[in-house]
Amino acid sequence: MAQSVEWNPRGVVGATSLRRESPAGRFLADGPLAELVEHFWSVSWDLRGQPAVTRETLPHPSVHLVIEAGRSGLAGVSTGRFVRTLEGRGRALGVKFRPGCFRPFWGRSVREITGKVLPLGIAFGADGEELEKSVHSCGEDREAAVALMESFLSARLPPPDSKAQFVRQVVARILEDRELRQAEAVARDAGISLRSLQRLFHEYVGVSPKWVIQRYRLHEAMERLEAQQSVDLPGLALSLGYFDQAHFIKAFKTFLGRTPATYRESSGLTASAPAG
Image (cartoon, rainbow, N blue to C red; front, side, top):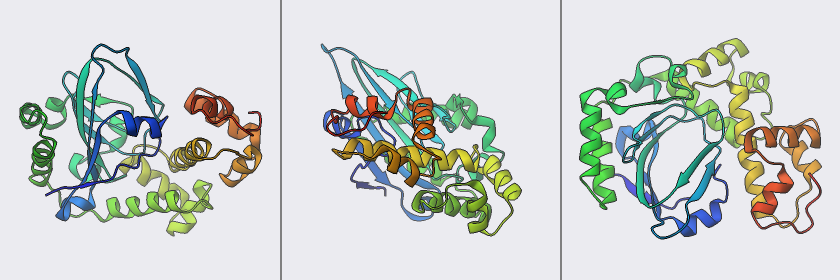
């Protein structure tokens, strides 16, 4: 049975306030499924009588199975910023697969669904549609809904895939080791050629090693810009592997739609912040 854990989001714009305002939950998978599923998640909101709000996320290199009224689907890795306007009352539940670990379930290149959302009926056939109905029937019982999704995936547990686990470990190394700033360095660390690494990521993750490096470094930049009262932008840029501050600002704006300085302003942290 999946166990509830504390929510500590990465890549969520304004994560601190979102954690306060929107009841959210994370549940760890149990048994063999834990090797393939990072967690189950649940987010709910009640904005009845209030203005709509916009939420933004810089997604991870993970595939998600999402169940939400009128918006359910299998979501491949989102290569851009995910923007969602919330209004009224609602709830979304989902499964976040470990990077590289949806491929064993899917049985073919995950690149096919990168940037796409497939209806559950197309992704899993009639069983996917039935899962959606069953989860909705749980109402506010999150634990029961998570148990249904866990059972659905456990019944389809694929045979062990050594390549999926290898890719998962490589992605974890990129996340943990800030010195791995280039795909070539990741390939050397993994003990394979750059071309082999690129092929594996294309097949199992759906995006390139370079993309994963950039995404995780931007996640870290977001966290540090939100959490620290004073940030040395040139120093931050170099520590994250950018050539200089200008390169960092350009990359940040490309993915987040604003400069680091503007991001800090939106987070309410402007004191001692260098221009950028």
